[in-house]
Amino acid sequence: MESVKAQEAASADSAAGSGGSSQSAGRPGDARVLKQHYEILKELAECHAALADYDRARDCYTQAGQLAPDEAAPHVGMGVVDIHTGKLDRAERSFRTALEVQPDYSEAYGGLAMIRQQKEDYPAAFDLYLKCLELDTDNLVALLGLFQTSCQMGTFSKVIFFLETYLDKHPGDTAVLFCLATLYAREDRLEDAREGLLNVTALDPANAEAAALLAEVRRNIQARPVGSGASKGLPARDGEDLST
Image 1: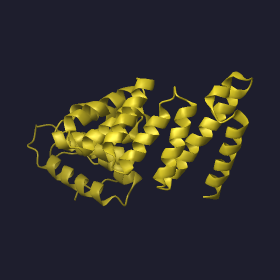
Image 2 (image 1 turned 45 degrees about the horizontal axis):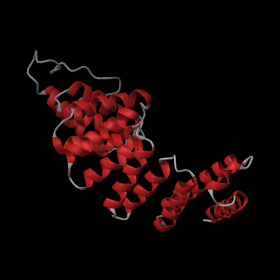
Image 3 (image 1 turned 180 degrees about the vertical axis):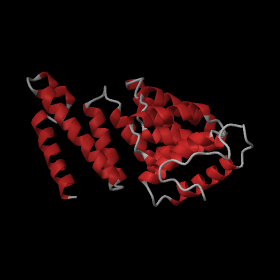
Image 4 (image 1 turned 60 degrees about the horizontal axis):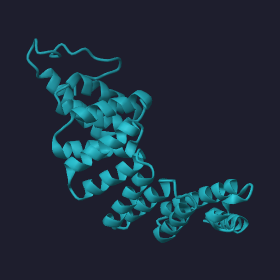
């Protein structure tokens, strides 16, 4: 908390030095000072939001937006704060404002998707999560949101592609590995599901949910008729116990 107060003091000093307004940017060096002031306010807003002090977070995001009207981030920050406080209509306005400022700002699409998901408009949420991931395949929040809406809708092919793309860059992410293995199992890609779940349990031996699904997948593979793909001749991976 003391570091937040120190940042607030630094922000106040910066505001005083720059005249507290973007109108002073005509003087030499003012653009740099205003940029620093903007970054401090944005960091303060993130700190307040992390501490659930949403009123102060919103105030800081508002000030940051006034200093940098061409930046989408403060509007997205305000939208996220409003989602946390249940003000979904105001949050939607903030995300749409962000897209007016920066039309390809992926997090604004992610925010709109979260609102549609909370309102149980799953097809719209799905499309917005897809748009977010097309712009930023590393957005984990959007990826998991896409997974959740896919489960609600029973549509998995597109989310599998994005999960696989994400894991190419982050192969040790057990949460995403488990999501992908779950979808493989639902799509009857049992060998792929088994391989993914073995990786999850190797990285996270205490994951009881993954262990239970792995046991179920093994039983389903063993129960397949001979000649249908993987069957009773399923080879064990090094150290794998096929008795469960």
